[in-house]
Image (cartoon, rainbow, N blue to C red; front, side, top):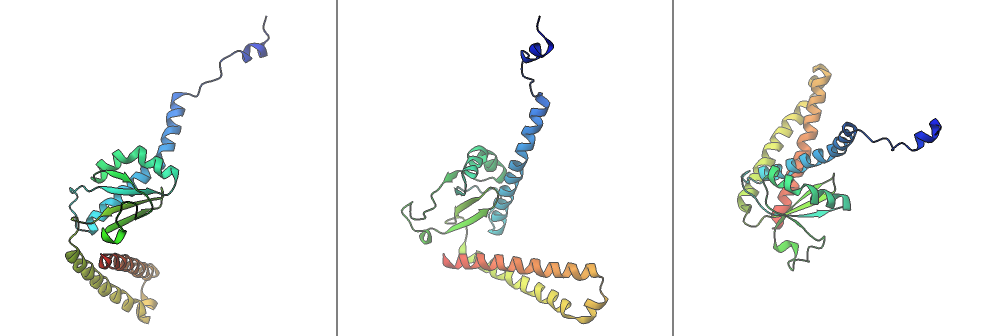
Length: 196
C-alpha cells in the first residue's frame, strides 16, 4: 500500500478559498476606487470653477503617463463618465500639433492627475464665456487679497501672537497658507485664460 507521504503527494493542490480570493480582489480594487473618486472630484471641481452646469457633458482628451494609467482608463472610463457626468473620453497624443491645429488656436483646459498619472484636456470653445470668466477670477483674487491682508494683519500683531491660544495662532497661519495657495491657483488660471 501507499505510505502516508506518497498518498499526500497524490492529493490535489489545496485551493484558495473563495472568501480569501474575494478579499484579495477587494484589496486590489481599493486604490482604483480612490483613483476614480479623485478624478471625479477633479472633473466636478473643473465644472464648478468654470461655472459649467453639472448637467453639461463635454468630451475630454486624455494622455496617460504610464501603461498602467492607460489600462486604468480602458477599464474605468464607463464609471468615470457616469459619475462625473461627462461625454466621451478620447486617447490623445502628447504632440499638440497632431490634430493639425496648434494648441493656442483651440483653447484647452488641462487637468493633471497624479495617481494614476493622467492628463485630461478639455476644449473650452463654446463651453466657457471667457470675458465673464476673466471678470469672475479677478473678483475672486480681490476677495482672497482682502482675506489675506486681514489674516496677515492679525499675525503681525505682537499682542495676538502673545495672548491667543497656540491652536488659534496655528489655525490662522494655516489659513494664510491656504489662501496663498488658492491665490496662486487662481492667478495661474487667470494667466491661462488671458492667453486664449
